[in-house]
Image 1 (tube, rainbow, N blue to C red):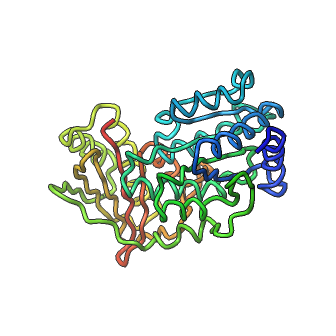
Image 2 (image 1 turned 90 degrees about the vertical axis):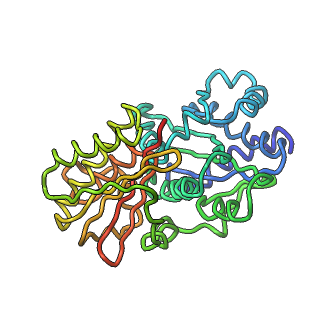
Image 3 (image 1 turned 120 degrees about the horizontal axis):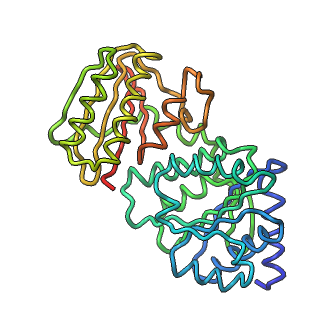
Length: 325
């Protein structure tokens, strides 16, 4: 692809993905370094030319190659580490919501590539859910997102997920609509009733009786005993309080909190005997502070590393994941 063709791809990506919506979301599927670098550099250079706030989150080697490819434009780009950008799905979504507020009057353009090597299957599923719900939660925001995927390192299931969660694809230097794209609610709907794996090992349980102070004290004591460091223990207590409050104020008022230790995290189930959390997109977008539904989950998704929501035959359950570090 010539430099002029790459520049045209950048302009095409700017005009086409959202059809008038300032939000655009595309997957860059590449099988060699050249098929990554050319469209990625075009995407970044176009953003700099248009005065966008450009953020790049890539591995160190690939980031350096991109710096060289865009030349002096790299000085106008905010380079962040993959570990910093991909800390947790809920925190990343909240950060994307904040960017237009922090950079008023400008489009925010992000090029990122997740490191999938350390992701457990449950984490991978949630990261792709984030890719999907972004198309709904961020619609209307002045954001351009290009998510890079090295098809050499991804199995068929991962490649299919990329195509199902991104409305636009860049492959072999060509930008096109994804024929496999699925609307966010439809993409996540099957998981609403998917059974969660049962807790393992020693499980600590407290029935919810309306006393949130008791819940917080208990969660702090048990979480400390399970080895959470102080900062993560505080996150756990706040998240458990939010979910227990939802049961008391907006649910049946009857449920339980279960805590146990996983390999690299503490897990917590908050159950609601009559809960009906069957909206697959609940808690993925900020709501008014007085909203009956979704506000507590929006906060909790930012505090925790991962949140799973299920409706069961006996109510609902919210599973919180709080990693050790």
